[in-house]
Image 1: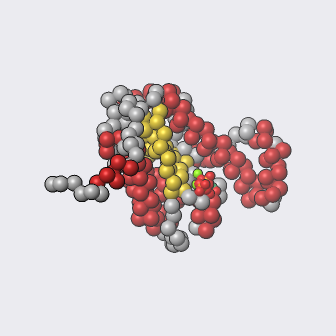
Image 2: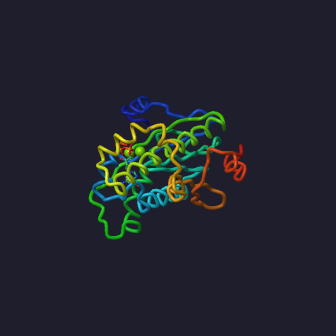
Image 3: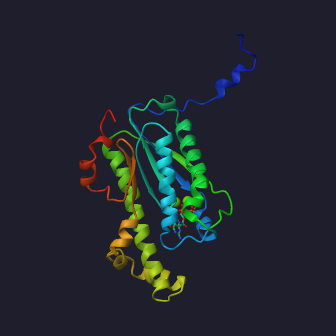
Amino acid sequence: MAKSKFEYVRDFEADDTCLPNCWIVVRLDGRNFHRFSEQHEFKKPNDDRALQLMTKCAQTVMQELEDITIAYGQSDEYSFVFKKKSRWFKRRASKFMTHVVSQFSSSYVFYWKDYFKDQQLLYPPGFDGRIVLYPSNQNLKDYLSWRQADCHINNLYNTVFWMLVQRSGLTPVQAQDRLQVNEVTTKKIKLPKEAEEKEVEVTRIRTKVVPLHCDIIGDQFWEEYPEILADDS
Ligand code: DGT
Ligand code: MG
Ligand code: MG
């Protein structure tokens, strides 16, 4: 069929093919969840309903989309790692990012009531997305370690902050001042086991998608699940 005279507009579409042989990471993050968590009365510092809903959405993304080998989440964010050799949508970055973010967002609304029961969803939440490529396994492990370390630092601060407010009766401003003065000391505070376990959410795929709550900075996890980084994974 003859092309219309308008066809030339396709040339304006930018090429966004991801570099071959690199891990493709899509990270999404809740938009203004500071407000969203307050309006929906999330428990402080960690709301199990919110974290479990995030993980349910990540599982759905991994089941619905192709070639995701591992996902890691904390707070209002989740990172999805696509296999190095993925040919999904000819490795077009915009396809990866938009499919992940839209599937996750619709799942968040769809499954909301299963986790929040009587707490009504007051307005539609949104998520932003970004894409980063990592050429080596070490780069990828360091990326995931960076997110876990970020989670640990924030969780440590938030747990101590809310203990000072809720248990010691300090005002939020007083608690903030106390933590600033004692920043070095607080970093050394040993968290209750319960708080540590809550900080990490990992999902991986073998034959099915399994949520795990474990450390991924050390070697043990990667030795236990070598298939995640396997070249032909
Ligand atoms: P953004 O991402 O720039 O649009 O802005 P925010 O407000 O989403 O900022 P972000 O992503 O740095 O921080 C996440 C917010 O979500 C933070 O204010 C705490 C809140 N949040 C996440 N998970 C929980 C939770 O389990 N409990 C409570 N109370 N808040 C949470
Ligand atoms: Mg956010
Ligand atoms: Mg965030």
